[in-house]
Length: 390
Image (cartoon, rainbow, N blue to C red; front, side, top):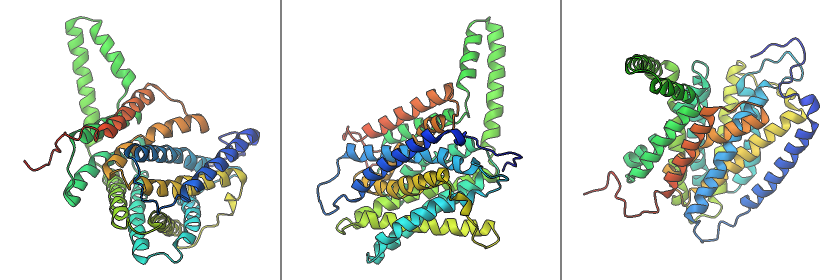
């Protein structure tokens, strides 16, 4: 947390009325589109096409990619210093709004579906909580990389728990996406590798060998440092398992209650309520079991960000995810959501003026290629799954 002597406005909001109006128009337009989605008649038995489902999942990944910049915007914005706020406060504001919006959709609904939504919400909460706990002791890049292990964890958990076949193309796409996230998050310096390659090719064999060996030693040292798991790393592993299991359970319940009207909206609302409740417990824990005073958040800039993250990227995005998982699989969702860091980088560059570098472009391209490969996996139905019976 920062302590400021003068007014701290990291985004120069005092002279950004034009941007605020743009955000309001964008939020209003997105909300209108979202309400059209929420009013979709679930009694229609026409199945959702596979490419439509993947397109919806990609849109969800784009929406979730804006969360990083929006949350950072909330946590660093300081119009009335001094500003010392726990991350749990912004989480409570975001998920509290989501819970309030979702609550009316639970009235008079089937108890079993509400409980199913609570289960999925608890799994999502586990992902968020372990992420927050891990970030206290490990870098965000490392935490994001561990979170991206979802693309590998989900296929294996689906095979182990649900007996679903593992497709080789899904594995290739998952590993490729994992590598792309590693590059995007700066765990591998592409520019340095390119310079090392150019230097080695331009000098003598002995010098190249010496230079190559030094790079190998450096890479080995970095690998040892990275794979030497710390307590924070082990906690961060809760992300891929929490989020991954949530994808799988949502897919399961959407199919299980396919003959029940409005099941997706009911489950989505229940998930929001569960995450909102967990965020309240988290905030009260930080304040020695007292509810924090969030009156300072009643400011136009904060309210825009809270409305966006609480309604659009939580309530509506969770609904869209469940809607897509009527057709798409949890594995496809995990691969598509691996593109989230790409959209986060683009949104951060626009909102927070964060600089993009070679790693951003190379890693982002690899991730998008991986998502495309994952989407094409089901086109060739003759491909045998890796764990299929001979």
